[in-house]
Every structure is written in structure tokens, then in C-alpha cells.
Amino acid sequence: MEAVSLSQFKSQVSKGAIPLDVRTPEEFAQKFLKGSLYGGESADAKEFARLLGYWDSPLILITQNGNEEEARVFQAQSSLPGISGFLEGGMEAGEAAGVDLDMIIEVDPDELALDLPHDDRILVVDVRVPAAYAAGHVENALNLPLDQMSDLALVAQLEEDQNIYVYSDLVSGGMLAASILKRQEYHNLRLVSGGWEWIRKEPGIPIEVEKSPKEPGTALPGNLQN
Image (tube, rainbow, N blue to C red; front, top):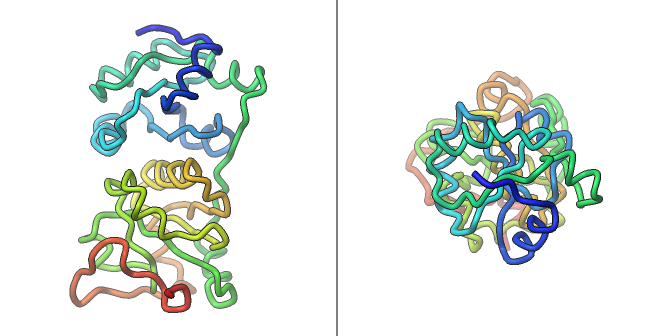
């Protein structure tokens, strides 16, 4: 695997390449190079490869300190064909060179419970598969499955002034979803820590079950529909 210099990185990104950050979710949430997708750690590589396969763009891996071995392990375990290399010097090199940074704000389910009754611009986005959504989800949540988030027409139904709360069944899946939305310039965004497992145990959050599954992307809350 080739190391990509900072100048090459900037050139490739300007032509459509996507930075794919394979650091830990904690490191990614704190700061990442703007426009990056969260790629998951090596343990998530196969599942993330399935999801990222929908993105038809070259990928440049972002590691901690430009760790070549970490990049090679991810490539081997994911078998993603579009990886063009890894950023030389990693996240630190990009930050030192003044590349724009971004972050993911994480909140606990109790904060979501406090906001739900009082915020008429709130939109909860459930990125789990439709079957999991149908079995139980936050009341009025929009189902936008991760493997459909490369469909920008689906993502485009979200509005920039909405207060978006995202959750999945896994921290890593939620982090990928949040990074996709950030890349599409949705910055008024929160990721709910602990995902569905923590949410369903929070007494202040209303839960509903679907009697018949809805098409993904159609469950917009009534106060946000046109």
C-alpha cells in the first residue's frame, strides 16, 4: 500500500476521493479531517466494507500517526477495492498542515429524553435495518438504513435547520451514519451514545412498534412533514 503525501491527498480529495478514517470511534468523534467517513476499526472491516461498497469513489485511509500496518490490516480484512493508499503522517499530519477539522457530538439517551418534548425541530434518525426498526424504535423516528445512505435523494429529505439525533444498534454504525451526514453538510447533529440498547432502557423516551413495516425514509414526524 502506498503512502499518500499531503499534497497528493489534497489533490485527490479535490477530485472526489474520500478520506476513510480507521481510528477508534472515540478518536474519530473528538476530531477528524473534514469530509472523512468513519471506516471502523479492523474488527468492523468486513461489515463496513459492505456498507462502504455503495460509495463509488477512491478511498484514502486515515490512521493514527500514519500507521502503515494499521492501514494494511484494514485493507486486508475489508477487501475494499477502492483504497488508493493511506495519508502519510495520518490525522496528525493533516491537522498540523491546517486541513479543516470536524467532530461528532455524542449525547446520552437521557439528554434526548429531555429534548424530545420541548424541541419542535427535533428529528430522530434510526439507521438500523427496517426489521430492527419495525420491532421497536423511538416514537416518530425516521428510518434511514445505513446501507441506503449513499442514496443522496433519501438523505436530502433532511433539513439543515433540524436538530438531528442519530442512533444505531452499534456505536461504530452510528458513527459512520453521523460522518455521512456531516459530509453532506448536516452539522446540527448529535449521536446518541450506546445506541438502541441504551435508548430502549431510558424511561423518558417513548418507544413504538410498527404493526406493518414502512418503507425506509417515510416515517417523518408529523410536525416536520409538509
